Amino acid sequence: MIVDTNILIRLFTKDNDTQIEQLVQLMEQGNIAFHVLSIVLIEAYWVLRKIYNFDKEMILRVFEDFIESDGVELDEDGLVQRVLARFRGVNVDFVDVYLAEKSRSLELSVLTWNAKDFKKIECEFYRPQDLI
Image 1 (cartoon, rainbow, N blue to C red):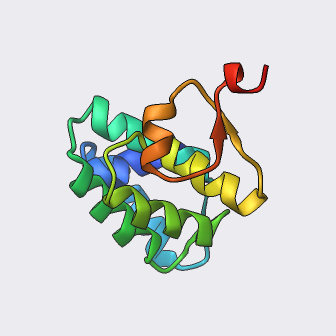
Image 2 (cartoon, rainbow, N blue to C red):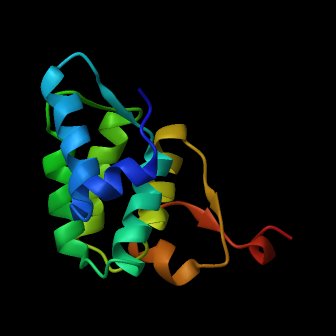
């Protein structure tokens, strides 16, 4: 099943005992796989950082532990692994690292006004004014 961000948030924050118990029971039955879309991980990162005040390293550890669990499938497994590894070493937004890695895999450049951060993650990017 494709999981919504709220499922991940419950698992990562453990802030609702009833819902956690239900999720654990589902996972222990072993006949369900959690299919996680990259956009859901991106949203989960934002919620954990901005709403729950998790620090970057804590979120990375939670994500890495989760995606290595049995019954968890990622829609872009290799890409997500590269994003997590790259994100650990830079001080830019999670979504910007995702865009940079996705642009590499698609062999496309990124259009952005955020030259400062995209220089840090060494991807091909252009500002609109560069193309006029």
